Image (cartoon, rainbow, N blue to C red):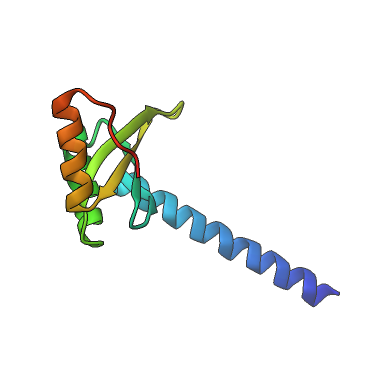
Length: 111
């Protein structure tokens, strides 16, 4: 029983160290990628350290790893003061359709 309790305490301490390491890494860099896949990239960042343009570049670079272009989708300011921005990863055809719709003043197609 004592061994089980000690093993559980050790596991919880290690998990806490891992969480602190991740948080520390975020604060050192000033941003983190919350979600990344071939459709979207979600980036949380400190607005005092990074501009929206710098984050667009990071989002675009992440989408490029999937062979797509990153396009701004939406952004929210959280109560923590950090901004969370979503970028859509679009193929060339999707980007062309989006740009044509914007130019014509039509609703932007969602795929």
